[in-house]
Structure formats: structure tokens, C-alpha cells
Image (cartoon, each protein chain N blue to C red):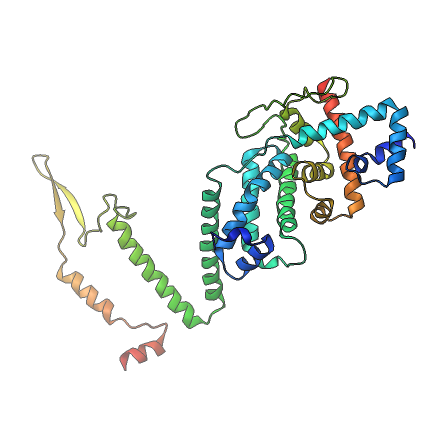
Length: 192
Length: 177
């Protein structure tokens, strides 16, 4: 199984896991751990919390493997679980009032954006560091933040995002549009 | 098209998802509106910055920690299932399970003593069978006296063995038979 795991789709893997193949679950972990950590980290801004949430996501998949039915893509299902756990954590954090946008990645490192060849007039964000972009994303209202991360960072299709978030396609497109405009406003404010 | 219409359609415009007619209207508007034209450039640049953000990966020990959690979950599930079975089983099976639990405690107690982690005795040794006490001599030296079991003690033990269980006469009858 491990050598030939690449030829299985995600849906094949979860089906095999449902039939007791533990190697299939290991392959699911290999495939999804990094992209889920990236997704949750961009949502919460803290690496340790992001990893805990992704671990809880895999635990939920493990415990509730039979809850998955092959009517939606597996990726939709696992992103939905991770997204819900991240939102719950965010609400807990708001209650605790310890929200901080200053804590960044594993090395507390500020990343410089690559130099841009655009003129200063056109390019309002070449001066922004990755840290600032991350901070701006985290200042977006939750419903916009989710779709911006899923669309512009995770590069999922609108259909997938619609299924993960559980709202119609048109609403998702509208939220992405409004989210991008808000992100631009926030970045402009932070740059002045 | 006005500025509001332009803003509403901007994402679809950038993603090339507008009809030919709407696309033409967007082009016409931005040709005469520098604010909207600038807005489009800014949004495109921001999207470029967002896409270039460093991909954060799980730490090296992520899987190790996850498998530890999964193992712990598996152990807890097994214990819960045993408890569930125990709680829903008849009294006889419960008694048997309780006996087994006592046996396991005794066995594990022996194991802990073997490892020197007995909680009943600080030096990790089994408790002495005879009580000990310390006696002070005239020269202030101390003697440890180990008390031997007396005849009276043996008699008491025999009497205890002969005692019948008054609370459970039926069981005594079985024993007497």
C-alpha cells in the first residue's frame, strides 16, 4: 500500500480506511497536514494553535471516518472540519480577549516580499511585508477571511469553497470580491 | 457602467469570468475613470502578494505527536468499551470482572514493587510480616525488636477462619456441603 499510494484518489483512501486500512489514513495525513496547517495558520496567525487544530482535525476524521459519505469531495469534508475548529478557536480567543496580530510564524520572522517591477503609482503593496499582509488578512471579518484564504492562498475552486462554507456559489463570489476590496482598504490604512 | 458596478464586478473581471459585453463595459469604464483603473491594479498586486506568501508547513514532529494522540484515543476507546460492557452486563459477570480487576491490581502491585516504586513502603520492599518496635537500652543505644507471632494470635486467626457469613446463609450452606 505505501509504495503505490499515489495512484489512489483521496476518496479511494478514505474508503480503504473505512474498511480498516490504517496505511490509507497515514497517506491522508501526508497529503493534508501541510495544506491544512497553512490554511489554519493563515486564519489564526499562530503556529502552535494551528498545529493543534489540524491534529484535532485528523483525530475527528479518525474517530468519525464512517460519517464521510462519497457524495462530496474528501477535501471539502476535511477543510470543513478544520475550518469549523479554527472558527471555534477564534471565538474562544475573542472571549478571552487575547487576540494578537503581532505573533507570526514558527520563527517569528518577518518575510520581505519579492521586489516588484511595477511603478510606485501602480504598486501600492510592494512595500508591505508578508507580516503586514498576514495582519491585514486577520483583521478581515471572519466570513471574508475564510473565503480569501481558501480562494487566494489555498487556491480552491469557487465550487469547493461554496461546499466548505455551505453557502451558494453567487454568495461566495460576492464575498471574495468584497473581501479583496476590504483587504486593499486595510493594507492602505496600515501603510499610512 | 458606473464606479459601483465596476467594483461589484471586479473579481469576476480579474478572473476573466464576465461575459464579452460586460467585459467591454468594464474596459470602457476604466478608460475614463482613473480611480477604478488604479483600484484594479492595486487589487491585482495585492493578490500577487497574497499568492507569494510563504507556504507554512507542519513541524517535523507533527506526525509523532499526532500518532501519540491517536494511540491515547485508541486506549481510551478500549477502556470505555470495557466499562460499557461491564455496566450493561449481569451481576455475575460484574463480580467476575471485579475479581479480575483485583487480580490485576495485585499483579501490577508486585510489578511496581519489583521496580522499587511501591507506595506502601518507602524503601520499595514488601511489608514485614511481623510488627517491629524500637527499644531504648540503658546505655542509650537503640534495639529494633521484631515481635514473634504468639499462640494467642494464632488462636484468633483460627477463630476468624471458622466464622461463617451471617449475611449470606445460602452461601454458607453451599460451603458446608
